[in-house]
Image: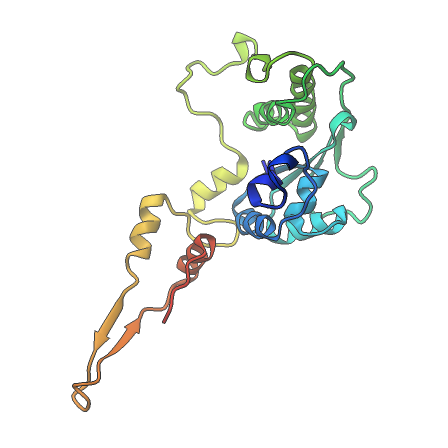
Length: 242
């Protein structure tokens, strides 16, 4: 969920909290660094333009697709939502899996995006078709804005559709299952937990050495990061000096 807030990126002042289309290069760079790790990317048209780094929605979506094979969901408010799985079409009109919105009297717009994502994921994690996921997202979003409150307005699934235990594991997406089976991401790099990544980064070392020819002239040698280690440094904005 992109959930772009320009005020948090310094793109607008404290009184600009309602603005959502003010671009931020820092935000775009940070989002794009994370996109290769995503299975699902959800955002409004304005948020997807920020993520793709272009005012043109089609170009922004094409840039996102270059960086990620994730399913892309475009939230379009009262017009519903569009789901794009695969190549980005040249003409977005009529393309993708489209789900119309639900006409409701808006009582409170807060929580609409959270409601949409909750509804979409309730289908996604159960392996439902993309259209069914989008319909659920639109329906929950509509229910939330038609009621007072935010979290209290979230609907609850009937008891028979819930997991048998609140601590039972939810079903994983197909991409997550592939990662578990191959232990590799979409780009072929190994999948790490936090602890294994730290252990991998700990193998980097800077050694001070001297030679018999010049014993009084020590020099340092730093091990070269692997592809995975360099990706971790890039995400953390850390420079590994040689």
